[in-house]
Amino acid sequence: MLQLGSEVRDMITQFNGVIVARDEWFNGYVRYGVQSKELHDGKPLELQWLDEGRLIRIGPPMRLKL
View 1 (cartoon, one colour):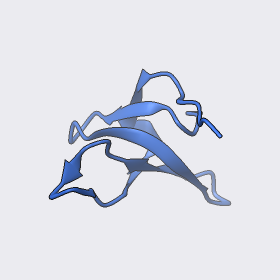
View 2: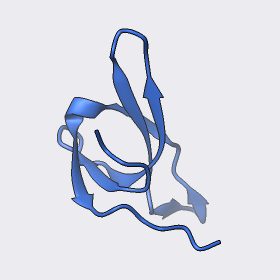
View 3: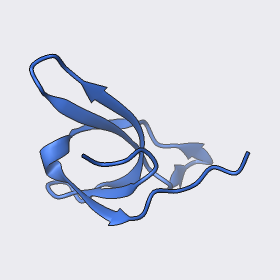
View 4: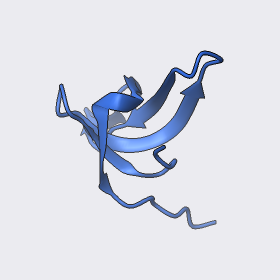
């Protein structure tokens, strides 16, 4: 299981980002909401929902500074 805040890469599309959400279904299906760190025209790219099996962790979980 991946942790929220981890930096990940989609092995199929090569999309990189940070896990900001986790979606788990009753049948065991898990997917993650991944937010890119990049901006397009000064705005964040749309959140991508990706299957757990497609993701590899490329960075440790980020810590929020409150």
